[in-house]
Image (cartoon, rainbow, N blue to C red; front, side, top):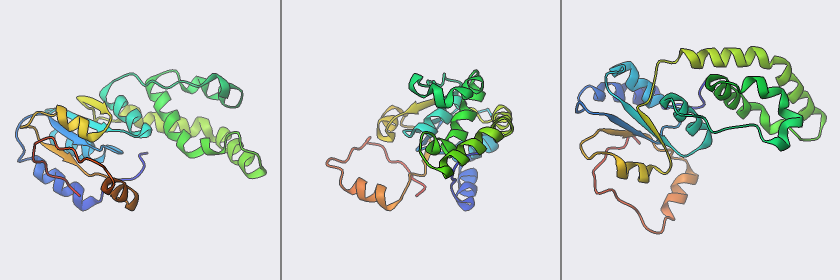
Length: 198
């Protein structure tokens, strides 16, 4: 249901270490697909609030959903002709998020010319009720909840975290992000020492 994940050995390490952290709220930076939050929920249940953060649209939608916040997504008028059939699948939070999640797989074909694009769009629309129901059902069954979600740069997020609170993150480490990070003109520091899992 979620794209990508952190490796199983890292999930085990986080699970073990969480038991020794101070009994405060836990903050997760660079939440991605919320694997760390799900690990923390399996360790702590709902006894300790877990707060998440990310900057990508997909992750923000998941974060807002898990935090119980509104999902600020609507179908644009200029796409209603091609995608108006999705309207019944946008009515509640779980349906809307399921539509967004499934949309990452087929929206790339919408509006493009060619037999293959039309075939992929038609096949998706034909299978949509089954796929959507399955995804929405999984979302409704999720027990993981966030105390809050911060949509923005992790450095700004860390500025708001209490100094005594545990922070865990697994920042993306592709060549692109490493190269981009090395070009940053002025590194920012929160003045806190934080452990990173990467």
